[in-house]
Image (cartoon, rainbow, N blue to C red; front, top):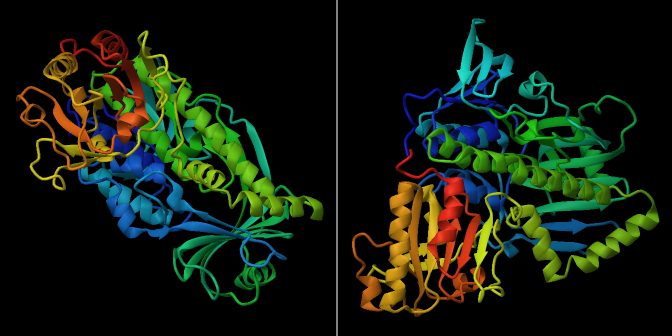
Length: 570
């Protein structure tokens, strides 16, 4: 999709990873965007580092070629984490990231400065230019638009009217302050040090290493070995000010004390002392025309590397909804009203989880630390616990079951349907295009279908269907396409033998019929509970929005009419 013309652009304030993601995603979905940032250049320090699986998935869907590819190529892949503690021979625990159910079974380490550069390039390909040195002086958020005063790098001021404003301007958000919004929470009570340095010796180059020392946590995160991010909790904060930036000799002493004298530390790139806040804004949509995303809405401990990822996922969640409304194809009440309801609980959970990890890593007292280490050693070796922990870190377990965009219709015989709950992320199943002559050439990953940027209407036949079932599902697909136009992409999904073969009736589809996809393993049918003909509506971000069994179009139409504008009305 190309940006729309003739409409005032949506104003995105802040060109960090969250603002760049929001601008790129909006433009990719066909909205007109203006992106401003008060700084005169991109960040030149590493800052945030980790891109988790779910973030890569939602970025991948933003480009037909794969929106995550350039980030993946530039980053360093980390396959797991090793936990160590004094007095324990060997490793206390080893956590493997390949347990995550995603094509991205690893964490990608890439300095924020590089992430911003690559995101800016991708946004630029969609026509978005970052206006740097542009400061927001004030705003008036009205019911019909947002009036904003901007000051450019030359000092000249400009009054702007925007249909919507997306605030991605960080923890000290000018937009949040201009609206007089509170930012409830409190400081996390520890001092921290950070150092980007070369580390050589007995350390694994493709794993994070966490040392649970009585003096405090020490973590090593490989950026581009031998370059590592070293991060440490110094102890309880003793004053109002953040700790002084460390010297290299202080980092060397700390590493020797907590990780052993065999590690050699050199070539510092960035040394910093810092404090952490744990805060969450009361509403991500404080007025009809203004939205907050990323650190403007939530800040928390760096434990788990969730901050940037949660913010970028905020941006992608909002962008597909806002773009539909901006283009006149989406219903504002349901789509934009769902943003805070979906994303604020995710921000709250990120604060809780990162805070819990920090408190566990900095337990006072010998008895508490001994119990913690024993629990980590025992529980860390249990596969179900590891899988749940990795799912939490990777973000693949995020679900929106109570969203106004999540709905379900069950007929009298479908009360034990089972499968994914509505709001859950769809699995990246391997399917087969039944019109392709060769099985390998016809293989399709479900994640790749999301690159269309539309709602996917999946029509499950449940078994190799007869002509009557195919005709019924084709009819539902045709009505959906006629009613909602290109915003809905119908697909017929049927079981097929492992070789991808199917009856000629399914291979030779009429021109107006939906694409036929085989589910040779049957795993997708099983995952979604399609034991009988079933309708699934998958949102552009890959979450299951609606499910109906039996496959009747009435409940589907009622749900879609709350979300999308009928094509004849647009």
